[in-house]
Length: 195
Image 1 (cartoon, rainbow, N blue to C red):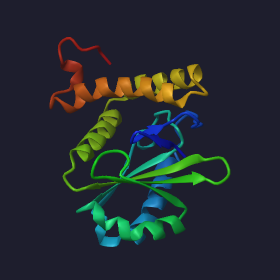
Image 2: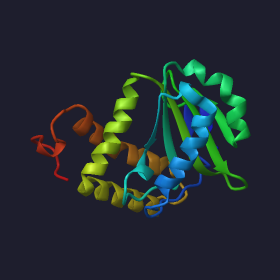
Image 3: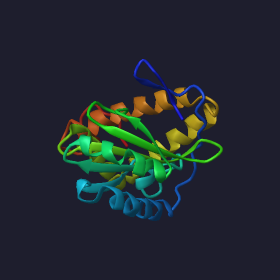
Image 4: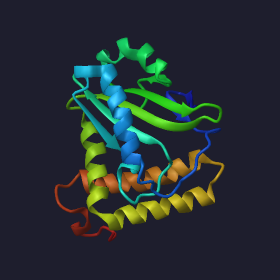
């Protein structure tokens, strides 16, 4: 599990690998979403498969990212022990202010299986995560570019997740500017690199 330094994740010892897309990932998401819905019932307004494993054909770390939208994140706290009984670790407010995160790792090697993100309805980060996922799904050329970048970074920095993450995040920040700050297709923005 990641350590925390100055309220930021410390990826110093984190092991990772980027693998080819697995067509079982959507089924794995669906199975886990059913278990999570049984815990949160009507408090879970929506459960979405997000992140790279939600994009067909995209290379990824084999970690399923799940977004659960709730009216208020305080509804999560009474379910911490239920989530722990399902094998999750509670990281609290981790990704963004006003959010909650649980992770599930494969026993013995700290290989991350699931990240479960909770955000309150209308939190701006929900829109960002879903729009980026949908953009990759509808722009296979950009998904291929991103897959190649992740593969190259994992080959160049196999034992340095922090460096992999830093360089991958730089790409994502540029993509966010093109996708999220415009209602137009980002490939039509003048002065922007093509797909």
